[in-house]
Length: 195
Image 1 (cartoon, rainbow, N blue to C red):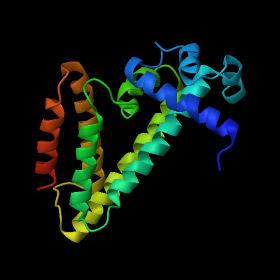
Image 2 (image 1 turned 180 degrees about the vertical axis):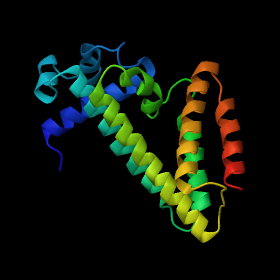
Image 3 (image 1 turned 135 degrees about the vertical axis):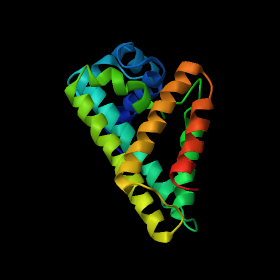
């Protein structure tokens, strides 16, 4: 059972994810997050030593939740590995809203920005995105074994390429303000996996 302190810390992190997914890391002050979370200012330094430490914790919490959701999608019973993988991409498309992603696109929003600001945040992003790619690789490997998909390159290379492509398409959605780049990426994904 979570403690009150754990609930407060989590509330700060969840609130920050939603705000920073819209505004970015540098544009958001700690006071804005604490006010939105309904937490007194003194609580921040009780949980986090600095804004960078807070940013690292936020990214790690984001990936913990993201990976749990991804694991749920990729383990859905009664489906082939290819169907599970395509459900993951469909979920990506649905959660990368043009106007508001409710914190679900934090890696897209903060990737380039914080990688230059903080080594700790860059490493947290690297570890999180590597964990995503690892899961994609395992699912692609399972799809090759169950015959539900084929590819002309290694499972690792296609997993890396697909993730890079979807991440880039998500940035393009923000630039163009429509989901066309994700639709194109979905088509190319199907072609690369021979679906």
